[in-house]
Image (tube, rainbow, N blue to C red; front, side, top):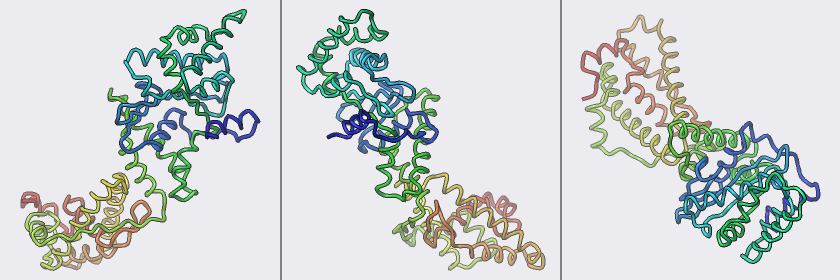
Length: 397
C-alpha cells in the first residue's frame, strides 16, 4: 500500500492526528520546502510560475503541484469546485505552454487528509482505458443531475478536452494528502539531527524559502530555487542548530611564498610592525590569517557555515577587543605607546576558545579572524594606529 493510500484509508476510518500549525507559515512555502527536500541536486523548484509549486527536472520532465488547504472544507469531494478547477487549469496550462503531458506529473496536494470517490478513481486510473471510464462515468453522473453543480463549467473543460490530452493528464495524476505537511521535512531531518531541534530547523528552512521567494518576486525575477543551493543552505542551518558538531580543520598550510607576500603587503602585518613585533610573530600571524581565510571560504562553499554566523563571530571578537582595551586603559597609562600596544594584542590573543554556530573551531581560527579585523582597521594595537596607518596611505601596498 502506498503512503497516499494508507493516509486515505486512515481518513476513511477516522484514524489520525490533528494537523500541525505549519510553524506559522502558509502551506505553499511549506510545500515548496518539502519538494526541495525530496528533490535531487540537479532539480529546481519554482512557485507562482507553472503552478503553486513545480519541480523542474534536468531532462525536461515536470511535476506540477496544486496545493490545497482542507482545514475548513474538503477540496476533493466529488463535486468540489477546487477539484475540477484544478484539472481545467492543468488542461489550459499544458495546452498554452505546449507541455508534454506524457512527461509531466500532475499532483493535487491536500492537507489535512481529505478524499472522495471520484478523486480516488482519478488517482487510480493508470491506463487510457481506465481514464476514459472515469470520464464517461463523470459525464453520465453530471447529465443525470437535476441541477448543474457550481463546478459544472470546470468539469465541462475536462469533458471537452482532446481525449489524448485528457487521458495523459488523468493517468499522470496523483492525489497526495497528509495530516501535517511538515512530515516529509521532519522525516528527512530526523535521519541525521537531534529530534529536539527538528522543529527549529524546519522553521528556519521554511522561512528561508519564503523570504527567498518574496525577494525574487519583488525583484521581478522567476521564483525558482536550485535544489543544490537549498541543500547548501539547509546544511548550514542544521550545523547552526545542532550543537553536537565540531568544525573540521581545513587541511591547508601556507607555503613560504604566500607567507612572504602577506608579510610585505598586508595591513594587519603593518599593525604589528607599529608595535615592533618580531619576524616569528608576524609569520605566525600570517599563517593563522591565511588558514582562517581558507576555512571561511571552505565552510561557506560546503554550506557548513552561513555568512550571518561568521559576522556574529567577528562581532564577538571586536567586542572582546574593545573590552580588553578598556580594562587595560588604567594600566596602559604608565606604558609607552608601543608597549601598550604589545600588551593589548597579547591580552586579546589570549582569548582563543570560541564557538561558531555552536561548534568548536580550530585553534588558528580566532587569532586568524582577529588579524582579519585588524587588516580592515576595525581594531588595532597601537593607541594611534588609525592615524599612523593613514599617514602611510592605509597599509596595503
